[in-house]
Length: 472
View (spheres, rainbow, N blue to C red):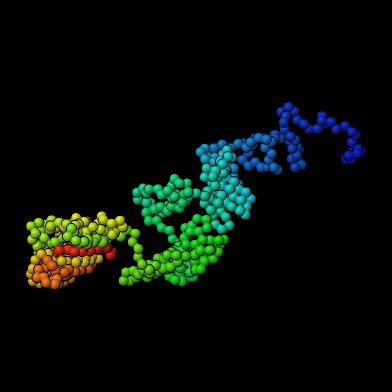
């Protein structure tokens, strides 16, 4: 009976040798025996050519075994790139010039501490902290730092508008490009602007503070009062404010207010002293000029040594002229010996003693006045009606004095009182004191002198006062 089935236990140890198995010959070196789905097995070659394999796959993690994976320069999307995603959404490659990470929208980098640094790992470009700040650096120096309340900038800030500036501006010391190293904010452009917008309600819709550590000035847009306020303040603790009655401050005083459709008000120690108005301006208190424009000159006669007859060099009466005229006989005593103040407060420079004239240092409206005490000089005669007034630039002003006028001149009729028993005016008492005040507009360097006309009887000056000042 033929043997048709052999059980495993029935095979003798080492009964099956290599010679009894199909193993091929030297032509099959390096090949493996492949089962053929019930057919006779065949020897096949193991394909280790990964270059020729157009769809290689890994059955597990790839261990580079301390070696590198090398990519050449990528010339297109089909070579030398590391790709991720179903549609090659993310690629990493080098194109021969730049190293590129190319991702789809969005591309997300996730980290609780994200750093962007230079190649040598010696300088930071960007540092991003989880639940914290984002920092931007320049030359490894932090310049912009975000925070829970916004952002902080170290150094200056330069903002360019859409339209460039015409020309090259000089650099402000404390501006963005200034050399003081306290660089500030600079906005530069053809038409630059800085705008603060607040809600139109309350006594604080916007403000700007100019301050040191604890005190300074606040510019406040007060919507309730419809005005801009400048206030001085001294702060005592955090979260202070200067609008209204202020908060957390020890000092709060108004310096100036600018009212909508109204006045500009200036204050001194919290008291309003100056206010513009429709008719001009109002002052509370009085005005003090630190450098007044004006003068006050005077002379007095103490006896024959100081006599001043109004006559020429031949002793004849000067019927029409002005004090300081070259034809007028010099006084035995100077016509004016004192000035009290002038354009710089020291006296003298805007009034000429020798010419007895006032010279306007600047153009403006001036108030001028004079007062003269007269005496009769050794003659007799009848009524002597003399016109007194002003000469401007050595010409009678505002008209030629051919008759008596009123306005910027006045007429002095000269009666006299004789001493008892005398019939000669040389023995007369002091008899006349013409005076006059006016307001006139003068140009710079206009000269004003006092003059007269229609003097038929020779008179002399006993005392003389001439004053004036700039009104505005």
